Length: 232
Image (cartoon, helix red, strand yellow):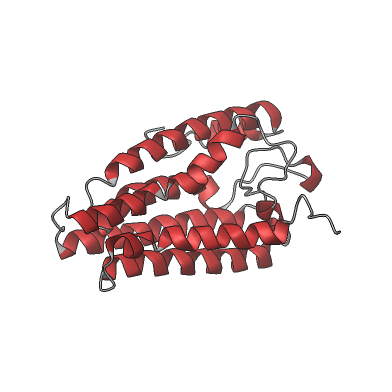
């Protein structure tokens, strides 16, 4: 009888993609509303951005998809990030899930069209900013680790000239504008919680890079802010 492989990266990727697709469409599924155009736009924009950014990133930096797909198999992932990384990676799902339940049980009165449109534009801009970071940074891993096996060095181009963790900046903005696109004040609660976790992770990651990545301290002196220019 053949034994089942303990690790199958290909199967893991398929399972994760299926989970993410379910979560992105969760507002439509949980609300039972097929005509909810804001929820359709939310899912479509997220999926298109994911696919396009990964294709472009892999063409520019061959191997980055493999690095990110080995999410659970990296042996040198920082111990604290084994907890924080999954929380930020999948915790975002609480936002559309809450919005879907809100729509089903009518907890929040729908926002105006102008609010929805502004939120959509900001979400697209935030995703584009995060995607820019992914495309520019060949070491844009899903976990915090010093990638000595890949010649890890400081990246200071593109959005990294503006802020030290642009991927997180885009994610944080996306957390807060999504509730306004999906007409849910209640979805702001998980948005604040996940953002707080993101801030903690950013702080720990930045400290790790300053202590362990050659040249990062000098880079941090030039680019002063971690997430938001003039704030932090």
